[in-house]
Length: 125
Image (tube, rainbow, N blue to C red; front, side, top):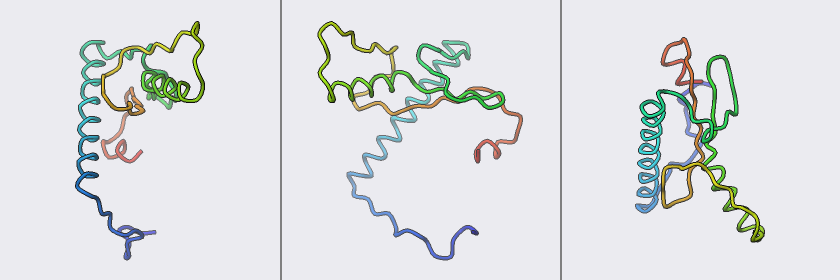
């Protein structure tokens, strides 16, 4: 298969103005949260990953992928609270502090490590 294709496989995407605004606000939120987390790891933690917040999920060579425990815990709380009632004596999950947002948190992955390659190699992996 060669790209670009001679005939596009999908119809053009048509979005309403409301959908465009929603997508743009999501992009802005992701960018702001990503920059804040980058600064937190780099500046406040001297490049060290907070293992109470981030759970290692995959390792390959010198790269480790981490999953955000905060977003996962919040999603589990929302799922469990809507699925079954919680006993009065049961303690709720207390995730480490996360960036505060009014919407459901996005599921984040953090990749940390070094790779000896060209920038283009990383972009397509």
